[in-house]
Image (cartoon, rainbow, N blue to C red; front, top):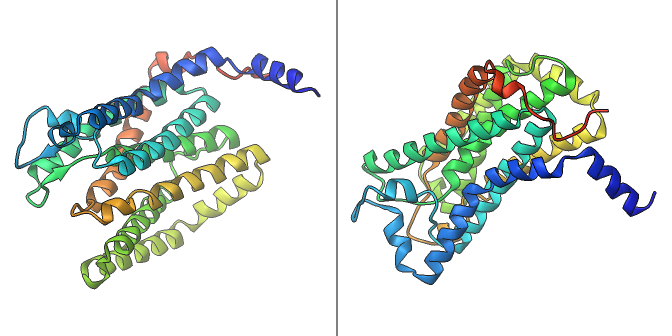
Length: 299
């Protein structure tokens, strides 16, 4: 089959114009961050004025702090993580024909965490600065987990959304990875609090796997019956979360005087899952979200 024929078949299967519209909406957040980063490069003084700085606080910082970054390295890592998480989430939503649902819930979660993160910085006595998109990345990562379960449910024709043991285990595994990464980068092992916290999280993770082992067995059986394309989708989400945890704390931040908040990122994951699930259940009952035009033609 010629390349031209393959391209023609692809064009006949995918509604590129419709998918491009949804993709453009997803890219609004990184576009704002990119624009602000460009403005900061032209005028370096903007970087300090746009982030939450409790020594020079202004109300507008509550809305700009998530979109400005400490340096270009942090901007690149956070925007890359956002693109991986959000675009993959849109791909999953497209496969299950829930694009409107994904876009609306993701934007609601962005607003929720925008306010939550800024308030966390303002009312936390130990926080002086708040800056970066990584908190929003964390919240969208939690939402991504829900849409992955929705994809499993759609593909396997089984109820996967109520697998609370799987969700709990994923939260604990991500939390353990975040804490371990923090300890490695900031050499926090000498502080007994962090190793003890890591040990508690790992022990709870093992306990949850034991308690909900039947759910893992059922998940394994579902994955075994998948096609290779569905297996690749599963491998992709593991790779995205691996990248997310490893790059959540860039090396450049570790070498500065700033530290990264573990609690804020873990709170983001929990907020993304809880708020995402509540809105998922509520919005799916509205006809608007069930009358979408499909991007992929089903033959």
